Image (cartoon, rainbow, N blue to C red; front, side, top):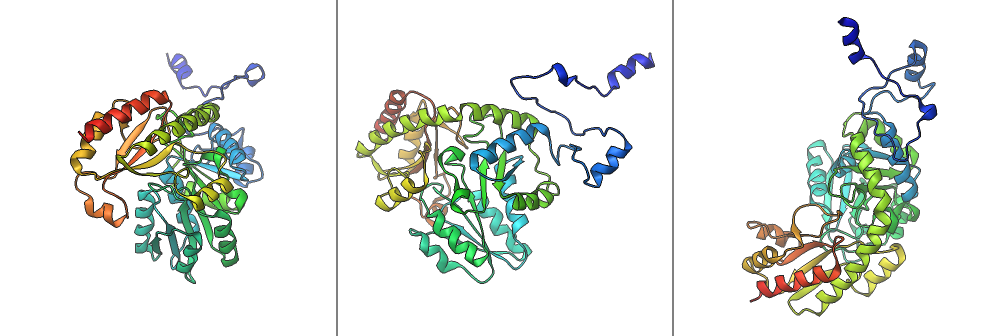
Length: 388
């Protein structure tokens, strides 16, 4: 009986000589075995490389990291369990007590909260809103160590001049970190323009199916090695091999999804621009001549996330508009197959909206893979119901 039970407990091995799947392996293991004691010694002495523990590295994750580094034109990448895991690891690795961090424009709210929390560890921060990139430099202090931003930004989708930021920062020894999730590696490559660190939430376009949570940091090998040693291994926000495999699957359709969504986006914007009940549209396609020049300089295409402001909005108009939509789902996140809508107004946060410089009637809309006529008809009906 014991011999039979031991069959259940054996460490299995595959014969790779006759094994070559089209779809990559999902290496679902926490640990990897050593060949023998000598191998164990050499690996620990860093004389040989071997996968040892998935928190430190995994073949499925490594395949995804290699692809994303190539797409973003970086030397190396590191996967994380979430976008916030990637952001936290980067900032906590590169900042130290006594430093100052500048947060530019309307970045992801949780990023702001994280950086503000660092004051308890002696790291100060300044949140600024600028209309011109040069204004950023007026807020730089002698101890400024990081400029953190998005371009385009969240909510208002404002572009910044990446080369101006990178040149100034390198002269001052300041790290530059951009959340490039909106653009994906296919539409913008900040590292090419001198930015130090690029972050993506893989939960969005890269995953593309609304079924994973993940993040990635891409940079030089030197910076990634530092982030791995502290921000990954010690903080432990490890992406699961299953989620890495799903992200690899998402990358296969990313080019065609972006192309389809950009075509639909343009048609939806054309409709919204003609409707008098829309006060303003926030998107690089609609943000004026200066913003258009920056978009033309840095973007190779356009993401389908945008901001829309309902004219003369009040809570009842917002409620009727959202509840009348049939093909836009009210939900967090974005970047999947489905169109989404979310109001900045949450019922009890009017003061917060004013502090953030946003309008009560501002909505975040994401254009998914549905037919453009279906979405436009849905928006028209919802506007009719909201303003009846």
